[in-house]
Image 1 (cartoon, rainbow, N blue to C red):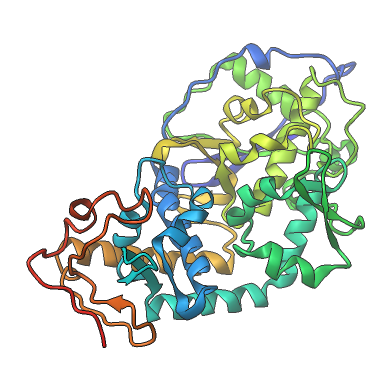
Image 2: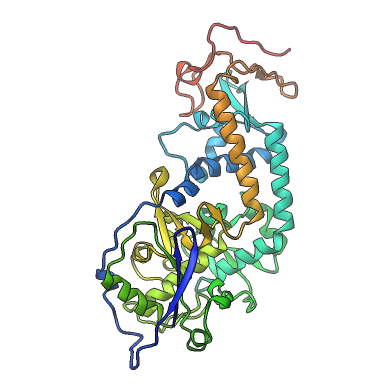
Length: 426
């Protein structure tokens, strides 16, 4: 039996152990009772840093790109706040103003005469978004396959849209995938109302060619004996300085020898109290993370998958019990689970084209944040010629605002000069 370990900067080494005769694969080991310490991994934490703001900014770009003139007032953008993943105590308008290289601010009077912030995309951001659409079109087959495989992981090939929405950023799905993508594949997907009155997405037919896990594809790392006994081993790697106790290493060696159950296979016969079942759960998430374009997702995004994936209670504990396979980053006041084998230091091994687009958006955000901190955007003036209600950016106006995003004049315009008059275009 072979074991594969990632050591240091992603180097792989292996060793072999024979199967123990008379071993009962359904017997329960002491894994649940073993507590493994969490060790910070600065390299993988760096991968997560800035991810929350990047996701929110890219989602806002998608929302604005679908609006007339690529511009919307703040109260329209606030309706999407739940999809942005920003902290509840952060104003959306404050967040948007941090990145003037992507979002341009002007102001508009509403029907009641209240002055309201209005945001639109800069030309550079709009051009990059169009590049992103091109990348999505070029990789559409891969994107649809990912969505099909996600649904094939479930018991009935069905998931609520709410659950898919939590994963759409990680899967690389467009923000408005339900309206712009699903209708184009009526032969594959169907929308219908679930028993709890939510809307669900169903895969209409099973595809055997897709029902092959990433671990099964990586046969080059497995011996003939492994394949014959179906005892596939997961790549393992630990943070530098992580000391695994001898009894834990012994358990791990035995656990890696257990039969591998494909995440696409029926596992109803497995006793959920056994380590064979535990290995199946790890295999399900190993495959799920491989379906994401950056091999990671926030822990809360998989919290609704217990019943669809036929998982036991507290199934996410496998992330903590298998720190050599998964790393839990605690950056940005949340827990993000990363598949260790997918990264060589901070570099993702299998690089999806969308990653390049996102990194360019991140670069624009860093530049805008730095320039704004230097005061380069405080006096930027803009008069909207298409909309006569738009007024110059950076000038204080009257009104109490429309919603919680605009608490008061002083709070909203504190970063702008207040001694200039309002200019309205004629």
